[in-house]
Length: 184
Image (tube, rainbow, N blue to C red; front, top):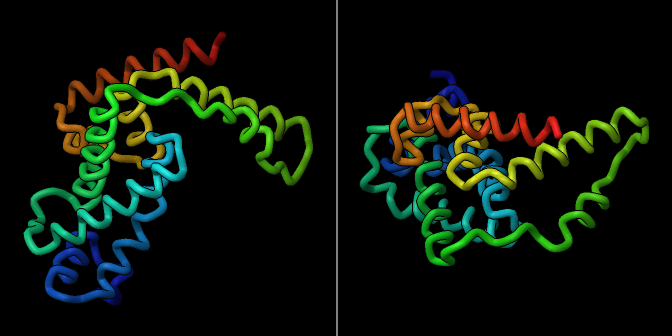
């Protein structure tokens, strides 16, 4: 291995558990963006996503001494995030509504160029986002893990605690609902 950049997540985690702080920095650098985007899309609130993000990394740090490479680090990390979100929603007994100023926020998104094509693409992304928000939590979660994080069905199953066939079923139903919603 030439450098920490070439090391697998599992090798970095083992190095970190042995006291190599640089290994943790590399793990954090690799996964902070995807993890934060996942939490933000699920929580739909930047302050809440920030809180969850910090909490997930604190849990990783707290669990480092007992970590064993039984599952891929990425799967383990997203499982922690999934559990944190699940605990939060269970505590609230419901999912909060979309932010009241969601449309205003969308309207304030800067558009560096103004061609109609880019406006159309923005509208399509917005329609997709709105369609995603109408999905049940379990379906939205598997769609985001599959499409944004590019995780395998097995990895998603390990994160969500369900079997591969359940993941496939949730993906299929979610995609059918998205297609129907977007064709309206």
